[in-house]
Length: 146
Image (cartoon, rainbow, N blue to C red):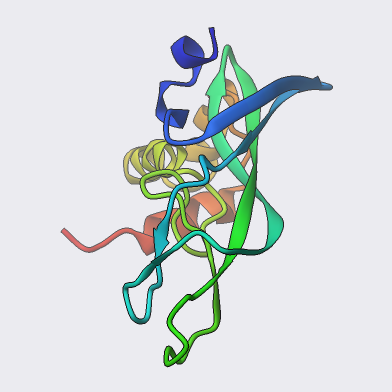
């Protein structure tokens, strides 16, 4: 059922989906595969610790969705590497420093290009994405110039 409603989450293991008021909270974790160090490129699976990351996701059934990822902080196995630990990234699902999944960012960007400010915010609210007009304008300004 989860694979039908959230097909873009196939790169993580979905543990559970909870209802929180009007929103849905999807709790997922990484698959535990070896990850390459961003500095030296040597793959490692040695875990230093875990951390939680919360991302806004595209709405499901008109309800806002919050994706809560439990990711690993890994230790580089190369003793000569300048970076000793690094955070696990989920390609295609969580960009660095992002607050939204790429799927939601595309939706917000399309609404921002078409309508901008208040109108874009109103359209997104009807779809289940609650953003202020300034957030919509910020998403518009972050898009590359055509």
